[in-house]
View 1 (cartoon, rainbow, N blue to C red):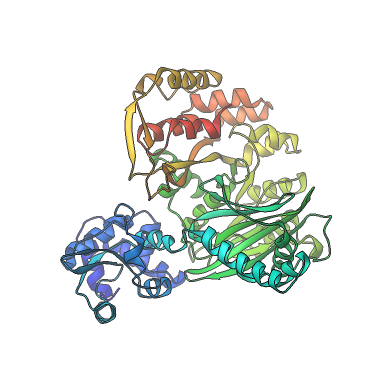
View 2: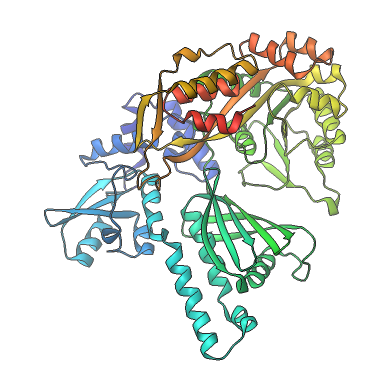
Length: 566
């Protein structure tokens, strides 16, 4: 922003939410990581993006607009091409009394304001907008993927048919690079986490996973399938002529907003090879613990255990439940010049400045266990292991924890208490596990309610009955079902695409290993008794954490039941 750093500091410090010490620490971190100071403060949870926008707007004497709540008609947006709007950091969201209404992240960019006046021939009224609001609205440029594909594909089919070409020639002449680039670009615009390309007898179905839910996007002619798979394999350095074995790879895709790392999985099926692309935006800033969905109580527990100089911290849950994101958030908090942090990952999902990250490479002899063993020779303070999959990795993690290192890793179990029997079954000695295990975090992801169209209503008896059944299955002593009197739901609106949800957050349970839990570990106690002891010690279960978020109108009962039903 065209605002001096010292002036911006004064504006935020004067609010009382940011101290001079906060600003200085964020300035140091910004210099180290290459981010903006304000982005660091937001990422740490010191202030929110909306608060910063409102504060700056008040200081500058300008209105502030929340583009997530104000509908921007596409006919006004298209006054400027997508690349110009993004390059200039603005959205034209309407017109009033003959003047264009323009939202900008930097309303002090007078050159852009004058450019707009000259280009449109109209006066301009500028409002300040948060960056996420602009990015959200820019997605509208890429909303109609069907029309773009229809044009690309039908034009080329028509050309080859006119030339008397057969199906093979049509596939060869099809602009596969444009088709794949269009698929990925639209997936990024929709904030998708995965792209699924599924071959069927007469078509290829493309699906996006948005907020954890798969959605059909478009069907392509089956003739493009082999060329599409070949293009993905070329980008991922996979074997093009291998069609009967699973293959994994990765490549990077450039967008206007930065670079997206894409993990590739190719799997043979009855009708051909299915391709799944996992999108990982390398420019995404680390989330704060609040943004993850951790309650104040659970944040205090996690911070207390990450402050320890040795021991083992595990995050459990199924694939896609956000385990790695939680670990990265913890590492970001621990990442200071005073410590040496090393990770061994498969794959490396995000590049973190000043952290030594190593990719598993079995052919080169780099496994989780060997990586840990090698890192121990480099005197690390903190180590992260992507996943504990076998006895050798487990033994190395326990050994590292015993010898003065803090070790973070993931495990696949349904809840926190089940992690202990799982580790014992893998070969961990009870007395060693009891001495090293500090904390187990279990988590799931639920969809956030769209705050633009959320409504409340009295909860029905049937839903209360389902909740009571769930509460009766396991000890849930920290939640009273009688407190559930209202339910919230999203009606559906243009902002959430009619889904009623926008984004995801975690629901958690944190099992702290204290003396009573250690005794049970030594006795090889089962998960049920460990769960009872943990809840007796104050642990809130994932279901209880989810119900609390339901009460606060953050998510719905249906979402919580969807991910934790036992």
